[in-house]
Length: 219
Image (cartoon, rainbow, N blue to C red; front, side, top):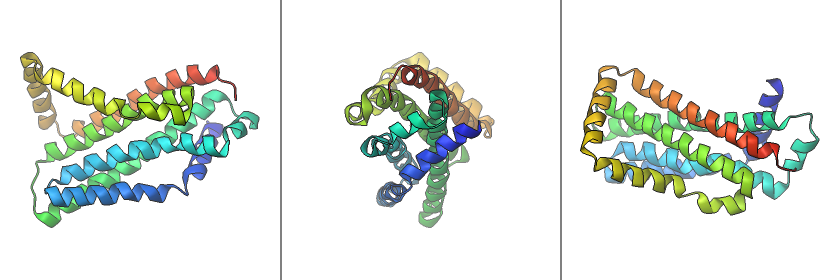
């Protein structure tokens, strides 16, 4: 476990000079939230843009050829994968907290009211999307490298969009969705907890797939 966290630290050290770029997502999110008078837009945009920030570690390692470093360190490939996913999870958790704080401040500043359920529902969905996109992209970057895998970067958004439109046309789905949302509205504490657990489960499944891919990859 200690070596896994060391692998994670290597990722953070590699990306730390690029982390200030994530502020661009925050600035754009704040601007959009204020202009549209939709604080939840800030939350969604910050998490959407930071999917690419979290995945930029692959580009940094490829440009610096630091992947060879992992090959000579006393580090198993599975530990490197675990460290990479812990890195991605921490990026997601830090940004969802920051995005929620910003959205809340904009709500107070502009005197816009949202129900607690709606606020936490947006937070949960945004975090789940971040984990879904991360889970989709990491195995691709491991398999095809960042330069080639970047072509697939917009697929998660397209999948979610098509999925929402498809299920929205199903009357039985909408009925079930209403019951689903009513349950979480009645049990508010479960809303962010569901988002956290669902996101982590997606990352774990993806980590297993990435480990299978990376185990066969020559460094």
